[in-house]
Length: 297
Image (cartoon, rainbow, N blue to C red; front, side, top):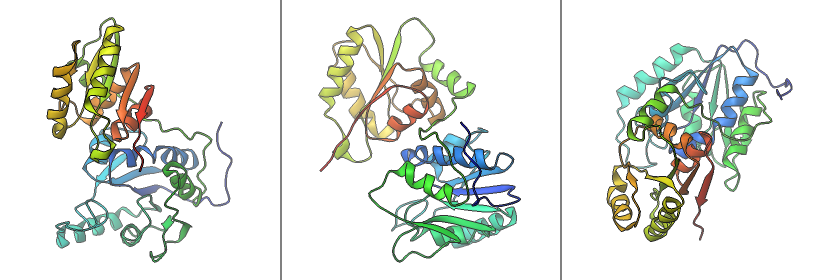
């Protein structure tokens, strides 16, 4: 059901910039807000300003955004809060190019605003909106940054500042024909159910023991499923170790798929079992049933 018009809507919006770098899961959590912006401003072009993960997944797509723009290394934005080797001239040219875009709206969906609010302010948009933590510089429209809050709801709050609302709170990422073609190059269409296991995680504390994944894989394979293990190059030893100890055959796809191809594969799966990580949230957005394994202190 379409959302009702809001008095917060900005008139004559042709271009919208949305800042969200960080991890893969960070992007997935913005999808409902991006959908709300599309509902509220159906004729506007939405551009996502992000890092390599975000632009790598979104380039060559028309939804949920029409363009993905790579942000140069920038402290607190595209990279860690410290230790980023910034190229001042490259950043100067980037902001000059962004101001030439003449964005009507610029939304900050990247943290509490300590680094990201000044960044968004330099884009030169007619109206800016985002979260504001204590001590962060203001934008035209802000909501307080609450650390212990659903990421999805936080971004929807920001979208509501410019009149964008939606009743759909679930992330959705359309799987393209190219995504499916790449996934079929590694696992062709055939009879049988595909399941995927993702044993990696950026934080080692989030990793369920490898032997547990091996046991789940064997149980699913015994039930007749084709079991695939997915991950990035850093997960190679972890994944190969699981495949070696499994009693049944499993397909090692470590490092073999782009993010789009991974979305295509995960969308074909009957279930995806994963640690709390970007691929878990990507799988859900691609339409797969998921079993997430979470760590907590």
